[in-house]
Each structure stands twice: as structure tokens, then as C-alpha cells.
Length: 240
Image: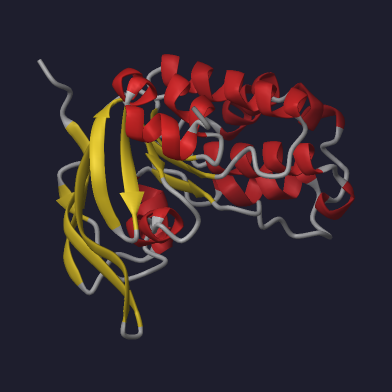
């Protein structure tokens, strides 16, 4: 049987002034699934994540999270319900330490979350380098270390849904491989993930299903393995 939807978007439209950034998109993310959104710059991927996490208000449509309506809720309320959004660009505070960021991520955790110390040690097990850098300020970290902090900060809220926006952007291949391993490990552990990733080949190898966005509309959705073999996807995004 198909998994129950953790997240559901129904005819969601988002406008910036008169311009439609999303035009009536609909898709679901089942519990425990990893779904990826792929498309060129400006296709609406980041706008979609911001609408889901409450940073943007849809002008039409409906967003449901864990069976309840979510559009209209404040971002901090959605974090408390089990949603974590790791934004593009990491958005760390340069004068806050690694540990400060992880403590900040833990502040809105749900009441049934595991104890803080357990969550902290779990994040350190995923990213051992952060344990070594726990007292170091965010602005002095490498790009890869900053991305580790951003993901761990999201995980400290004990999310049911983790949304990742361009986690590999600007990073060395060895760091991208490390992050891909962590994302795969989180997915294998049962965490629901919605991934936006510039490396389309990597995203589709990690994902169960994918949606292709073009100028604010979903033009194709399928199993990730099928999208990898789709001639249009190959030509447009995989250089084949």
C-alpha cells in the first residue's frame, strides 16, 4: 500500500506582486519518502519550499502537513509540528558558535522529541567534524562545515519532514559525497525528506520520486529511477 501523505500541496499558487512564481502546483510526499524537486534556476523550487515552511503565503491553494492545514501557520509553529527547512545559502550567524546554532535549532522541538543531549550526540555522530568545531564561530568555518551546521541545526528540532534547499551548492566533491551519504542515511532511518538539489543526477539517485518544475508549473512527475532514464530529463538536466 502507498505510504500516507506527510505533505500535500493542492493547486498552490504563489505570487511576487503580479508575477506568478508557482502556478497551481500539486504533489504529495509520503511518510518516509525522499522526493526531489528539479528544474532550472527560476523554476520555482525555492519558492515552493518557502511556501511550505510558512516564509511565503500562497495566494491560492492548500498545503497540508501531517493531515492538517499548514498554509497560514507561522514558520515557528510549523517547526514545533515537525517541519525543518534548511535554506539555500546556509544562513548562519557569523558570530555564533557551532554549539550556539545547534542549541538554536533545538528551541522549537516538539514536546515528544528525544532529550537534547541525545539529539546533540546524534548530530555529532552524523557530522563528527562539528564536535571538533563545537566552540568555533560560524563565520570562520569552511563552506562544507557551514552546510553541516545548517543541516544539524534543522535536525536538532527533531523534524518529521526535513526540507533541504541546494545542500551541495558551491561545495567540493568530497564534501558533496559526505552530505549525500548523510541524506541517504537519514532517509534509510525513516525521515521524510523534500530535496532541492542542483546536481540532478545526485538528487534522482537519492530520491524515491521526483517532480520537474518549469516556470512555476510541474511538467513531469515519476519515480526517480524512471526520471533518470527519461529522454527529456536526460537532455535538459543530465547533459545526455
